[in-house]
Image 1 (cartoon, rainbow, N blue to C red):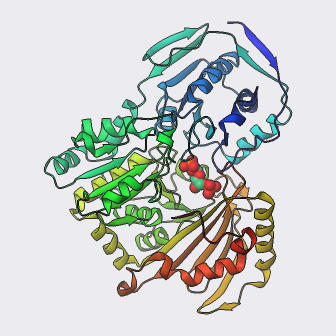
Image 2 (cartoon, protein in one colour; image 1 turned 30 degrees about the vertical axis):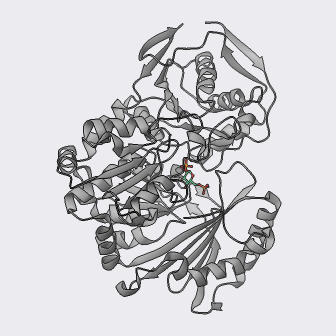
Length: 544
Ligand code: G16
């Protein structure tokens, strides 16, 4: 194996965001761009000689080409084994499972998640550490710093590797193991949920379901698990074929983008349960006949009912949510007497809490829920959790949700996204918000009095690391909140996210439309941040 050292020059924009480096495909296709970032990662890591690296992606455009490039750089840098999903495919939670199960040194996951794919769309790459979770901030910072001074990368000159046939291949001392991307994951799911009960509920027609794979990675996983193993009819999984451009759509599981599913779920021939997952299979959207379950409510309901699932029958050690996620799960934790942690946005912040056994379940408003079974959020796991819940409780989704609100109260919640805002405008807006923070506490706005106004700073209770500037919060004396953040996953300009919530304990007032119930707070958010005034827009691009 002859190692070549190729001269390169640094790119200034390789600072990973919320979840790895996400850019337009054309940015990644610049000479040495992907190579630099991968070499920067390897240069920042220690002790991987002869060890195993897991490699796979969501199958979007550039996935295969990127895998071939990475194989050669990994070989030249001295890894001993590469485990790669057949066809270069691995869902993000499946990759996390494989890293853990085979005790790999780490893994590279290729995805831009829910962002669109294709030659003019998005690509991404992130490194996951040996616990199967996304690299912590200290590592991603090291990758970025290295990328700013890199002047060469190592590779080998060989023909492309066959990614399509399962089995072992060897290049010099390097073993390349092409594996079935689904079977380890399916086995893990079988160990968590009550598959016999699910099979029975589906065959008896008690549960009817529809899963929208959005032409992304979960198609093969859903077909194997829901259809082959649990006996759901083949037509229960739609858009099951992974496509490089996701059929030209955003593989983003929300009511706007999973509209085919949404139309059926709100029609008079809706099945009992409907769900969708995203590009790389870590997000989930949960619906029932005539009802959409917000991700924040879904997390709270899962926490409240976890004891009904075989793997969590002993109860939960604790729960966690990202800061902008609604406080619904906090109420469940308080009532069950278990701790609830509030972390910054980004799955990487849950890793330490999960590893330390402080939490069993965690989730985010951005359509992510997961548990200690892997170190990523997990779309199909959430789907199976809900199916298992419905099978155990023998109640429709709407009854489960309304029953939960009656017991714990409802945290009425929404998120407004203003996408592709010009970066200077977004930065000025954040600065404007910051300036107001010291004077807001105590001020009254109609029925709302500001209790606190700050910028969220997180101290990790396991390793003591501190993450500052994680979103601006305005909290009111009645428990309502408005949160402002700039997204760390966009690829064009800046995306402003505004998260709004209000607690409604009165069961007779819980069935309101969120936009109506939150209208006053939505008006206040504009008063504070002036996004409409500053951008000239009259509405958010996406409301979830
Ligand atoms: C990633 C992160 C999540 C985060 C989401 C949105 O998810 O893993 O923790 O909540 O991005 O982040 P932001 O608000 O910064 O855009 P995914 O599914 O995109 O990998």
